[in-house]
Each structure stands twice: as structure tokens, then as C-alpha cells.
Amino acid sequence: MFTNPFSDLTQLNISTEIMQGYIVLMALLVIIGTVLDMMHKKSAKYFFEDAKKAKKNATRTVSSGEKAGLALKTLANEVLTSGEFCNMKRRISHLLTMYGFIIFVATSAMMIFSGNVASSSLAVFWHLGAIMLCLGGYSFWFVIRVDVAAEGTKWYHLVKADIFIVSLFTTATFALLWSFTSGGLSLLFFGLFLVSNTIIFASVFWSKFAHMFFKPAAALQKRIAQADGSNLNLPGDFDLTDPAVQAKFPDIPQYMGTNPENMGAGIRRESPNHY
Image 1 (spheres, rainbow, N blue to C red):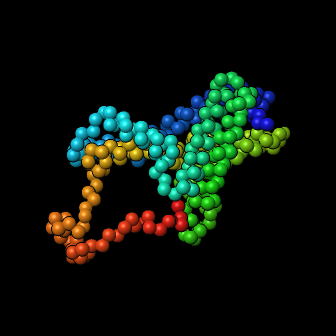
Image 2 (cartoon, helix red, strand yellow):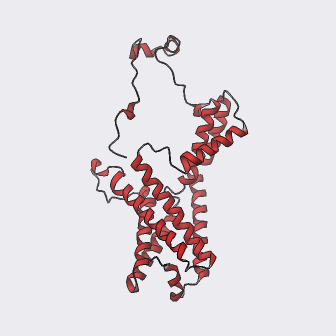
Image 3 (cartoon, one colour):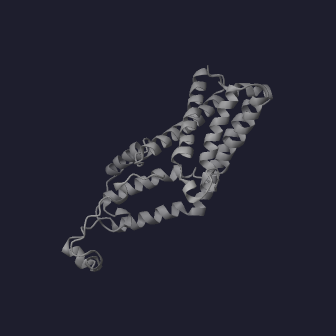
């Protein structure tokens, strides 16, 4: 049922070496874009400086074994299952997009670099990854994206932040259309697929692509900060009815009374209607 469209490219005088060179070029663009993003946003500098501050404010030392355990928890929760998303729709969309992208890119590279571009099993997973990308990308864009209409903006209004998600689901869409068509239509969709796919990897500096590398590091740093007591250099969670706390912060009784009410979970009291 599923055939690999890469096997037809040789008929267009596009050799395996050219396809391999293209993949290598895309990988280099990701590396260059990520480095430029780090230099522009100074992300690495921020993480290192924040880690130094946290170390000074730490109340206990976290052992290497405990850090390894925290790394495994981060991998299982924030990375593999996106457990930080409380909204289940957003979580499912993210997982479909993430795993769809990984499967799609991995199978593309495997088929091209192994020289077995006609592999039927890899072709099945290639199409599966593209379908997952479409499901995750389109559900995010049309169902749980920021409600731009409420802000007086048309849903099709694009900004730089939209480059990543739009190029993702358009690449998957053109890939499927390229695979399921023939003749001139197939060439058209292949060209659109190539353009959209190149945009994904060439726009790392302007898109959210680089956050895939920073997100796990930030999540692990947060867990370590909670474990060593530095709490990301944030103030502690005080009991506002405690006389000692009110003595330390004398403006509490002034603005909230001597027996402040428990405000509850705040935003969690009501499910958000917008992403």
C-alpha cells in the first residue's frame, strides 16, 4: 500500500549522493541556527549564570546519584511524555507532532543512507510519521492555537513564531501528496515538499526549533533547583497567616488583613478557553 517516493527520484537524475548531501546540509543548518540562536538570546550564558546563583542559595548538596535520578524523571516526564502540559488536548497534539517528526526524519535518513530506499517497512513508518505530523500540526493550528480572532486578527495571519509549526505540517502534507500522486502533480508536490522542508531547517534562528534542545536542560535545572533548596532563586512559599511571616513582611496585614484568605489554585480553578 505504501511505496517510497524516494525510489522514484533516481529517475529524475537525483542520485543517492545528492539526497545524502541534502540531509547533511540540513543537519548543518540546524547546528548553525542553534548556535546563532544561543548567541543571540544568550541562552547558555543565562543557564550557567543561573546555575551559579542557585548553587550559592542551595541549602543541601544533591548527589550524583540523585541527579541521575532527576535526569531520568525529566526524560520520562518532560521529554518522552510531555507531562508538563496540563491541557490534555495540547499534550496529545505535542506528542503527535514530536514523535511524528522524529519518525519522519529518522526513516528518511535511514532509507537514504542505507541505500535501501525501496524498503517497504521503512516506507510504512515514513508515511505514519507524516500522518502523525499532520494530525498534531493541524489540531494545534485550528483547535488549540492562540485565539487570534479574539484579538481582532485573522487566523491565517502569520508571524515569525509560526514558521516552525506551519512548515512542519505543510511538509508532512506535501510529502503525503507527493507519495500518493504521479506525473506532473507528483513533481509539483515534491517541489513544494522540498521548499517547505528546507524552511524547517533553514529557519532555526527565527523559529522554535532550537527550544527542543533547551527545554530538557531547563526542566532538569528546575528539578535540581527544587531538590537542593535554591528553588530557582525564587522566594519561598510562605504561610501568610504566620505571625513570623507577617512580621517579616509588614505590608501583608496592611493590604490583606491579619488573616489573609487562601486564594486557592488561581488559574487552575477554571479551565482556560485559549491556549
